[in-house]
Amino acid sequence: MQTGRMRTELVSRPGDPARPNEDFASVGLPACGQGGSLVVLDGVTPPRDGTGCLHSVHWYTARLGGALTELTVSLPDVPLSDALARAIARTAEAHRETCDLSHPRTPQATVVLARWSRETVEYLVLSDSVLLVESPDGLVAPHLDDRLARLPRATLATDALIDATVRNKEGGFFTAAADPSVAERAVTGVLPRSRVRALAALTDGATRWTETFREGDWTDLFTFVRKNGVEALVDRVRAREIADREERTYLGRSKTHDDATAVYAEL
Image (cartoon, rainbow, N blue to C red; front, side, top):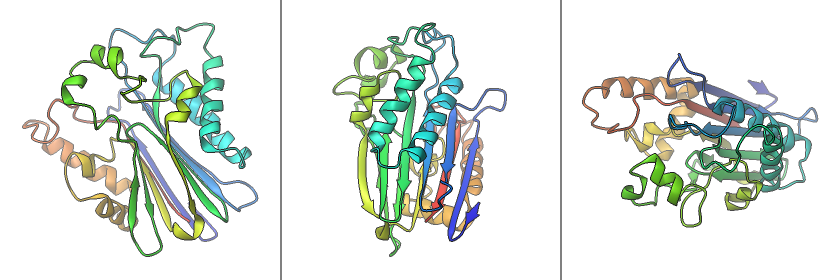
């Protein structure tokens, strides 16, 4: 999509066509044409023993993502962390009466937000999705919440252990679930608009290009997307996943395919 000088691209592809896509992505462009926002969520797939909730993860990401799309555009002066807190609270109220929101696996998601005006570009990252920011001189800076990556692998051995010890716990990692205060844990920042040429927001199903298959670093990934588009990025990840399906050289115990979402915006 192009509006004036702006170009945006979006792709979101399920890991399994037989299952709903638990990711969410949107680009919001106000009618005034002076700014915009992007939202990328990666729903956390629950274990088989349930979540204490009547609703699916994709219901949750659609609700939370819709609220964030509206709030980031309609309340441009509200910090992104406050917008996230409001969206989490709004979503929680939609199912508080029917579901156990205290369950550690209540539907939840990772979050990437970015919002730009004529003067600034704001960003927020919570958990292991990624925002890449390209400056006018071509330098690409990753903005990450690396708390999950820094945890010892032994700590992440089982879902039950993750829930009991590190999920949404001090010293662990945080996701958007039912507690609005988690927004205070997000990685946030504000950049001058003049220092930002383009953005790319990606869930970990798309960042496998760099993080799993080592096709290149973050700058290489950004360059690939700029040249070939977000659809080509996911195509390449899918091809590498299929090639490694039997040997598991790169994927290890990970599922072969994950929901993969990428949003690219040239400002």
